[in-house]
Length: 307
Image (cartoon, rainbow, N blue to C red; front, top):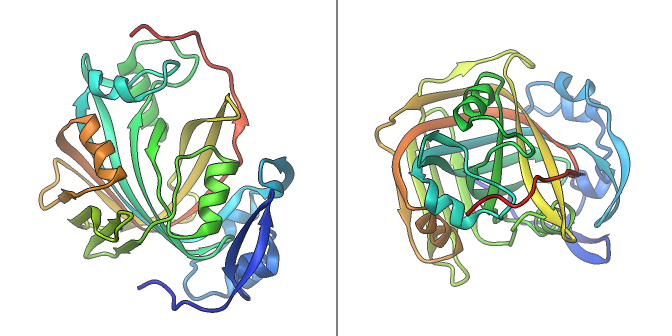
């Protein structure tokens, strides 16, 4: 269950005022969290991963901030589905192209996240995304796919990314260029299974997911680190955001059984429908992980792709 609602304080993020938990990590540390304190938190397995990632001070649309943003205890469930490239292409910007597994077929995903201990305090998140070809790469799509899977480095374009807290929405939308809004999000993930529900503006079910957790394996910190690059535009300029994921426990299954994704009425479900998913081919669950989310950096894009 999510933490009990408590007193809040107001903070300014580049002219946007948001409320954060009083006495929480952001209120006390403003992104410069004391790793020794986090190391004493019983929910966190350790902080070695973060000690090797020094933070730097940068100017951004949300004002001066430190990067990366650290997530000390998180969990996530991702289902990956096949979809027709034509449908995916219709939702991508002109500069991007679908990453295809075979000609005419690409990959889309639905992900639910739970961030229990984080520089910007507890929140939950959902995502609908499409796998994209790496920017400025002109080789065969299958080569990109094999390379990405082999190096645990994939590229994506996010269609929707609602969150449960104000600070996550403002930082994600204004600072990173992601399509974020605040909504009701309940996410529970453990070694048994996932239950998740995202609400629409009326409080009704937009998107729900239930799935059994595949057999869980534990990893030493740093043993399984993957990278995701997401493309966004900020003030009309293309940026790339890198996310490093340190998996400590989780499991995966191909052609999984028991996955129940229910579409309701809302922006998330509309985005899933627009992609026309054909079949669920993979289920990836992280029951315990850590994340370093870097601030976006400018990136060049090739000329407009053919329609």
